[in-house]
Length: 557
Ligand SMILES: O=P(O)(O)OC[C@H]1O[C@](O)(CO)[C@@H](O)[C@@H]1O
Image (cartoon, rainbow, N blue to C red):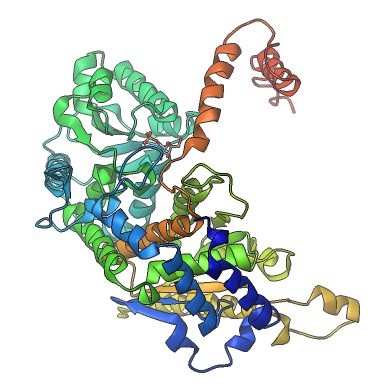
């Protein structure tokens, strides 16, 4: 059944028109019992929905919508390994990557957790080899730097976690620095080539498909850089490259030594894969025990998602409110605002997770849909965003739903003046987080300087009534970060289920890749390009006639 054909869809529309269309969120928050209805605690994670434009009837109807569209069943099917990725005929079992070692999940007669645990053990051995200094470069020196070459899901997850958990860096006997290069333009690897020593640098080629040109072109440049320093190709490849992919044959063909191939499975989507060997750089940085804690946090959230009634199920509620905002309140944008600079890559990570998953316009049955799906999602570390795009949130013409995310505890060990000062900075940050969500809700109706002419008053007016959710984690640890990421993974699935779309494929990225092949072939020809449309032909010929002549043109200016 199409979402809009559900009886409850119409009921929700009517409920909005009758009960909430002219009610401000601020009004709804005059009720003291609001947190009883809309604040949810799970394992020290607090998710507070009280600044959403909903009342108890809305929540009831959203749960009914979930029931009517078989959400509970869909969750069961996801958990048990049904082929929920229908266009690729596969399950989506990222949750299997974080099962406890003794759990089992049988798929086609095979316990896949056995394979997961074997691969984690192989990954652990690689981590040990590198961090104890056993793994040597071509000249016999221990590895000092590991570079993750990957893009999209093979980059953003490990990058997010490595940056967020820098304070959990493990004291290894041979500590290594980890680096990330994703862009096909060579800018990132070329900078690393200047800074790093080829003798002691190891590259991890992370690519689920092992066909992604962005990653393979960076890997080719890395190989050329190493061969420039030492000409024995077999030694260079064996001692300086690890491969992580579903395709053993493609890794083999590239030359990756069999022992240095770590495996992934086609039932893990790239953007859901950081929990697998794709997280090797994470484990190198924070150690295998902390990596396991990250998995445990996600697993705990999985258990909550898979076994809690939908009216108490936090990812379900996050998803249902996403539907409410997008399809009923007409909010087409979602901002992710972590009040903690360690989470600076979380908005980028979620951009892929949500927009690549739910940026769809046909149903599972292949029918074009008539309602909006994934909102435009973006974000930034909250305090910095206050000085950048919050103006639009407060006074622009668009409705934007905001997720505020903050740790409750930070810098709480106070034994010196500078620690006291840092703790004060934490309180300042929390105060800003709560002040902003409140200001977005109440707008100009409170505490705004009302002085000046009526014209100026208009400039100073804040409409308010912007919806937001606040997520508080106890403190930022591997465990709590695992929970936070899994929360959003499941939210994406919930929204997709209500919309009736497949969140696990990404056909929309293929056309551009194909066209880039033809374009590159043409770009390499000396002759004028005439075979494309007028606009593209002009741009191609402009570059062809100028890329040599534009070099150094600014020197005299
Ligand atoms: O891991 P791979 O196969 O190199 O793919 C990288 C990324 O490219 C995409 O396929 C999109 O082009 C993403 O879904 C994926 O995370």
